[in-house]
Image (cartoon, rainbow, N blue to C red; front, side, top):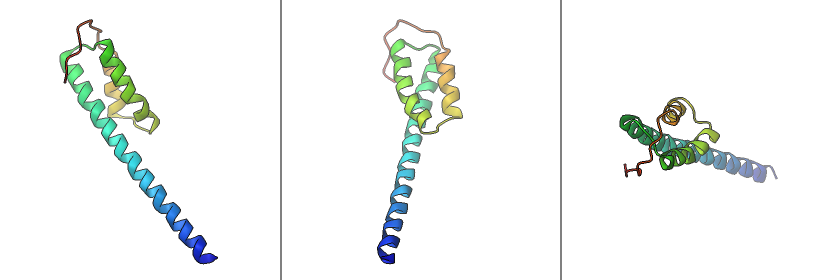
Length: 91
């Protein structure tokens, strides 16, 4: 019985570690995407509604996973950019 409990405990710890690594990887990808998009929008000097919608779509799970710092700062700066009715360009 002890061997089975030990095996289950180790399997649970491995799964938790894998989940933590997946979470970190997802946060890194979201942060990179937010950073790239915000850098582009800030250099351009404006956002379209589509740009803001896409950025919000990226930011919500990033924040829910515990993201903050530069990602949050860039997001807020982009939300303060003036809106433009121009069609969003591919970046």
